[in-house]
Image 1 (cartoon, rainbow, N blue to C red):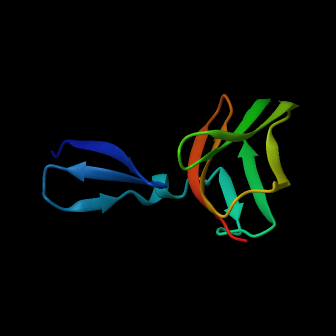
Image 2 (tube, rainbow, N blue to C red):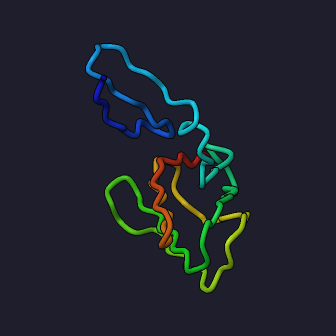
Length: 115
């Protein structure tokens, strides 16, 4: 009998067995992605689509590449479900980090603003 461990790699759950091969567990890899950012890179606005599996608050923070907070958006008392909104901000062209968190998940991703 093989022993194994489950590891998360990006949006995939992988199973590492004692043998040297890596096996992707098909059932676990079908988990829904909770955040979609488009387009990336973006020009005037960024579409933020997310899925809340449980009701609660959502906090979105955007940081510049140096770690300075550029914008903070708090959405309160959201019901579970899918949400979509557009984020617009006058920024200098460059790389930013978006941090989206609720009680059910946290998501960080690099976004690129073009002028």
